[in-house]
Image (cartoon, rainbow, N blue to C red):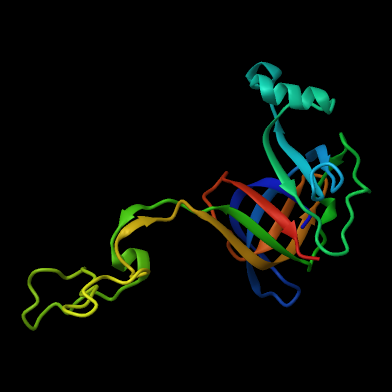
Length: 210
């Protein structure tokens, strides 16, 4: 699905014509430059490689510098590929051209992908929402434990997928079917209804769903 690279600014609220509050996430998207095209004849698939956040040449590694020089484009800090969905074409985008927030329109649905906030090593109550044990009736060893995790004699092992304590967050998360509330093409800002994964200023990719 075609889309753009951007950063999460934060959350705020707007009001609809009826005066109801709409919680929105403000996202700075693009402008992104088309670095190169992937074609079926050469690469086996179709995609656009976009660059975001221009970078000084002295900060670019040699293999990356050669890639940008080959395509005659400035150097960028972040590169992502976007494959077209059914019915979408990439022929309309030329190498070196810029794509802005104008490709999105209000009331359309988008998908947002980012790395979720990391919480480190957490227990079952915070990680999975366990209720914990009662605070009375003889409970004195573990109030926030996960309880029994396996069987005694048969099959004498712990099944895969049992919810236990462990690493919480810091994984790629995609939130789908988010509604675009407002688009500011001049400043490359869009407002998306609801929350999106990631902390403030985290790198995100936003995809069109049509």
